[in-house]
Image (cartoon, rainbow, N blue to C red; front, side, top):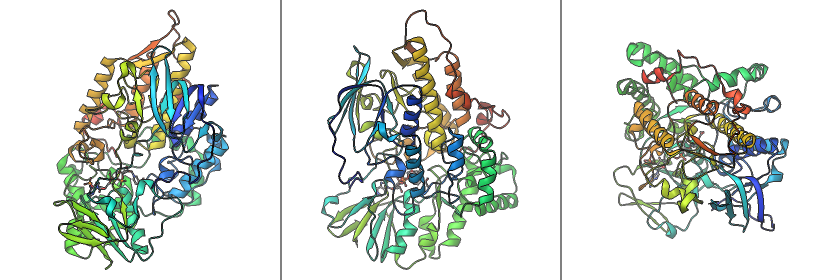
Amino acid sequence: MTPNSKNPKKRTAEDNVSFDAVIVGAGFAGMYMLHCLRGMGLSARVYEAGGGVGGTWYWNQYPGARCDVESMQYSYSFSEELDQEWSWSEKYSPQPEILAYANHVADRFNLRKNILFDTQVTTATFDEHKKRWHIETNRGDQVNAQFCIMAVGCLSAANTPPFDGISDFQGPIYHTGEWPHDGVNLEGLHVGVIGTGSSAIQCIPIISRQASSLTVFQRTPNYSVPAWNEVMEPEYEQAVKADYPALRAKARARPAGFYFPFNMQSALDATPEERKHQYEKRWESGGLPFLGAYGDLLFEKAANDTIAEFAREKIRNIVKDPITAELLCPDNVFGCKRLCVDSGYFETYNQDHVTLVDVSKNPIERFTNQGIVADGVEYPLDAIVCATGFAAMTGAFDKIRITGRDGLTLTEKWQAGPRTYLGLSSVGFPNLFMITGPGSPSVLASMIQAIEQHVDWMADCIGHMRDVGAETIEPMSQYEDDWVEHVNEVSKVSLRSTCSSWYVGANIPGRPRVFMPYIGGFPIYVDKCNEVMTKGFEGFLLDKVVGTEVPPKIRRTERWRMALDIDVISPATIAARRVPII
Ligand code: N01
């Protein structure tokens, strides 16, 4: 089912080779990490499970996949030349174009020569005596490195629920996150889609155009805002490119790491007419900025109720059959689960050949050889699409046996939920870095911004270790404990912590319920990372030569020293519940 290369290139396994760093994953995180480390003169090997670069955008080739952060902001910011030379064709980039961009970056910076594709890292073990990581792959590689850098992605471990009878089904079963690269022909077929998250909401309208019938199995309805995607306006592109650094700086100062106008006013201070006007205006421009209509939407339930009801009214107006419309109306907090952005999703249900099956009260019973049984009814199907999401944030770590000090594995350590210092590293795992790990803004920020900030910090950290002759770095327990507590505390301020989403691991039975990303806002987080660095890596233990007290040199991290607009984004504003964190 996985779209690795059909015929992975034959190669001899690497045996006992030493690198300064091994990087796991060649998505946007792994590629930029490699670029930085090489620029510092370090040797690095990247192992990538897929047959090409691009990570998320390599794997998620399902119909309709596109980014819901605007193209001009969803790209690397480290190279002004790259910014200038690349052009996006649409306001929201489709998956093939983002993948083409990833390939362009790999070629332009000659990254492939250090990447081995179709290779899964299976184990990473810290050798306490040698102070090095020993890494093994499914292709027989056995290498060692001072640093092991996990660039494994936050949403990369696909979740296919263990439905009863799944192996009985005679037709193909696809997962959106592992979509075959040679295309899937659903023309004229009876297709079932399980799930109504972002991936489903993007692919359902397109599958409906191909299938002779489409049956959607919905456990929880989702809010979705129209994208109103359009061709990139050349004037807009030129205007951005005329001063790209200014847009990047504005984006970095925003809670979600991307820029859009937001309104700091409370929804409850506005009259019903003003609110309706504000919501209509934002609905008409569409996308995630809809949630920036008022400052308190994700903090005050009464405020949230107003936007939730507005969105439900939209669904009722779009979907003609009142029973289907009601089934599609969520009754939970608006934006609690990740807000979806769509192109004609709700309209899809007005077609006669599209059926919505509610599996909220009675779950899918089983798969049979020719379909799915739900609530005692068998739905005959030729093909099934599982748009059932991911073991978010920690799932990709769990796929590798990562063993730190005293034989403790990361999975064991994280049994009750992930524990990290700043989402960058974890006690007991020296020199293991995590790019956008749990406990960092990660999925609550524009991913490429979050990735670059982490990589720049790590590169400066490694540079400092070289300056002072340190062999290892590891967080101290007290600092990790305090950070984990802070991540939990700050999550309680937001209504986001109140529902069963993948943010809290609730989408998969048996996972610990912990709010995993840091919701305090990207700039506050960045400021904290900068402070830790300026204070000589406060909270970290560096095993270094005594007497080598050299203040850290702020090199790459310099560009993240944003001037915070204290009136807009500060701990006080967050505490006052006035920041639209998307
Ligand atoms: O996954 P999801 P996704 N029986 O977990 C349902 C990013 N993304 O791949 O809500 C029946 O959101 C599940 O039901 P429930 C984005 O951050 C971005 O869609 O758990 N149903 C849910 O409806 C996004 O949030 C973009 O009750 C079952 C669905 O499957 C994240 O990726 C595009 C089930 C899973 O939804 C994940 O999105 C796509 C079961 N046993 C994704 N198990 C863009 O940038 C699960 N479900 C546009």
